[in-house]
Length: 269
Image 1 (cartoon, rainbow, N blue to C red):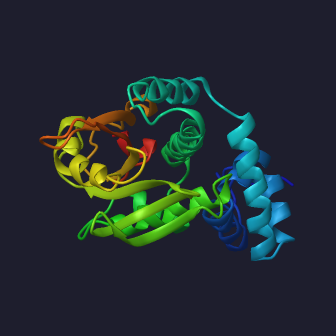
Image 2: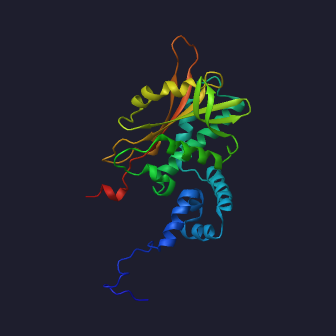
Image 3: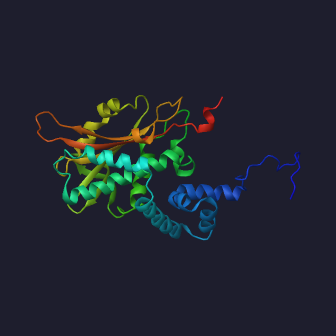
């Protein structure tokens, strides 16, 4: 078919699609991002059209596990290794506890990588630039908990767990008697390492007072980004906290999810 310059289809890009295809693509981004990444858009959309929601979720779980186990970029591997090195000083970081926490750390690093790349539509709309009221941290909490449920940690995840350090923790990951606690926050003014640790580290560390002194702090960065976003290697690190009079350090892996983020095209003037 020849498209004349004046026709309604002139200038259309190869990726343009009908409204039905747009909805199918949004469904994939929302419910099956690992499947989309693994198969590519055309094959993933063809598969998704033949599956109901429960079966698509099943396929997504398998795709997610495959990517976690076999697809690792050098940056992801280096970041994971740097975090592991930063945890070496933690007495509890050994044996089974080490294996359990490594699994959780890998999930965080790969989650940060995925959220750094995926388009901000569907349930990931909370990462778009915003006007007015900023999105709440509950969006990130739900997104991260859902990510954890899809991988090897499925069945170990609880949210809004009461009676932890006299409070309620955002996410708990349980391995029998070993439990790790994850605090989720949002930041709208200063997302530097020093500022995030000053604002949220004590709370994140407090939950590990009766278990392995290991945990995570995951922050939704809603600060303005007029000249781009930090590299993935800068978005996770190990922080330590020791309460006054204590002899035991708490080791918290901090992960930052960039939100309020323009697309690359929006930086062009």
